[in-house]
Length: 112
Image 1 (cartoon, one colour):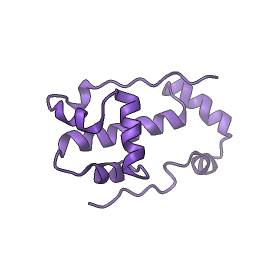
Image 2 (cartoon, helix red, strand yellow):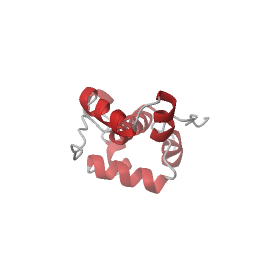
Image 3 (cartoon, helix red, strand yellow):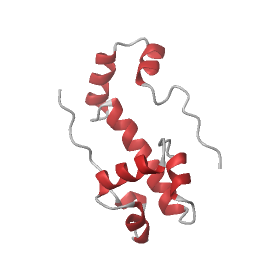
Image 4 (tube, one colour):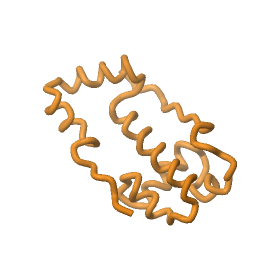
């Protein structure tokens, strides 16, 4: 499997430069329209993407799932999954009845 290209998608400063917005303006717009900071939104997308891979392709190695989710390594991915769900990837994968739509993850609100 090929790793998705990050391009400038994951660097907010690159996004801001392309949009010719101030970082504070982008942050405010994200909070007003998405309800999350740009960083929290990016983490949500990465989490959902890796969770979907974990559930839909159970034979995929954890390191490959982490790589596909744009995590720098499996340990970082495992720590992130455990912090968000309270479960290790193995425990999460064993709950085979879970579908992605059933898992709701609401990040802690960002401080303004």
